Amino acid sequence: MQGNADNFTVVIFGANSDLAARKLFPSLYELSKWGHLPGEYRIIGVGRSLLTHEEFRHQVHQKLTTLSPETVLDEQHVNKFSSRLFYVSLDLADSEGYHDLYKELMDVSPESGLGEHILYYLSTPPDLAPIIVKNLDLAGLGEQHDSQGGWRKIIVEKPYGTNLQTARQLNSAIGAVFNEERIFRIDHYLGKEPVQNIMVFRFSNGIFEPLWTRHYIANVEITIAEDFGIRDRGAFYDAAGLLRDIIQNHALQLLAAVAMEPPVDLSADSVRDEKAKLLRSIRPFKSFDVEKSVVLGQYEGYRSEKNVAQDSTVETFAAVKFYIDNWRWKDVPFYVKAGKNLSQTMTKIVITFKCPPQNYFGPAESCSYIANQVVFCIQPDETIALRFGAKRPGEAVITDPVYMKFDYKTSFTEAGMTPYHRLLLDAVNGDQMNFIRQDSVEYSWAIIDSIRETVNGMTPETYPIHSNGPESAGSIYS
Ligand code: BG6
Image (tube, rainbow, N blue to C red; front, side):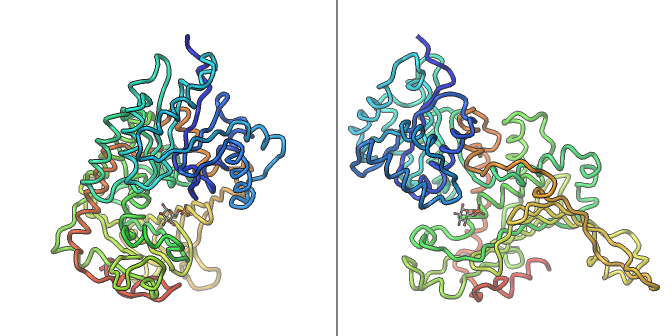
């Protein structure tokens, strides 16, 4: 008998993790409260601590209150949500414990469908992913064991590997148990409203797309700046560094969204085909060009952070000049900068257009001051601006840069969803458009590996906290 097709169970591995407390439970609670989930649901938290269902419910409630103050709790719904929470304690590395998970998962009436539709969420350290999927498979909980009409899907958090080789190993370990259509590699940047809007801006407005080429665009600049340090993530960060933490995923995904070709249609794979093609076209780095293309920095005091090596040469800042070897972008520089402990927290993409063939209103060099730009501000402001030159009032003809601006806050009254609301919902509904496909993960790692190989041994330049990064960062523009 087939159970209700809309009902499902979410299994959260790492139920006591920070991510689960700050993002996953609040998002699931709100999606449920708003009535966005397609049917009835149940959430099974999996963790090492020994907890009863009741203790787990109490803990989730407490964390919703303390760790997610922006979540508005309404008592009636909290009770409903709590009654859907269950807990299984197991050692993730021990296959035996997974039989308890199996029992808990199947302990529902067949007509409910709750045991047939299962979404696994790995909120666990990355090295555990292969072990978890293998154990799921051994316990009869992998994809090939699902009943007719059911589904089993898996969401995997970043970091997705540490280089091309480990990403491939991870892909093959997960791919042995789940088909690619059931694997949701999450990059929360793809759930941000202004990031999703890049594609809409480009492909729903006829006036920009004809200009979106090397013939009219001088350069593209992507900045992901944060005014705080590594917080309490020393151990993770000192093994990763900024290239792997930010550039491999968030920055390259923004670059792909800005530079990809129009997809054949809006199916997940058509869009992801174009992104993969774009990532594949990024020019690999060679040692002879790295000097002018990559600057790495480390903020002052980084080596005294907790769990960081005293002689660490891990980068907390990177400025990288990318080129895309295809017909649309050949020789257009894409400047990507990202860093911790910079002067402000801000993510933006600036498309700078070429100057008009003749500058009537000043010396030729002054053109860059008023060059047309499209500026996508992703955060904290959510705006898109078009910069152009205008005559300053007065007798003399002096041109100044001015902006036409769209602001989400003033143009729309609807409250947006957070990335985790949106991406969890997409995964439940099986929409993979905003998840990273296997090929894109591998192309991104190939680029990052090529940078890391060429900068191997380079000591990052120290920069003061709350500055704009290392002094030599500007050299990538030369
Ligand atoms: C995470 C990185 O993926 O993204 C963090 O690991 C970074 O280092 C964070 O701070 C930034 O996300 P957001 O949404 O706050 O810009």
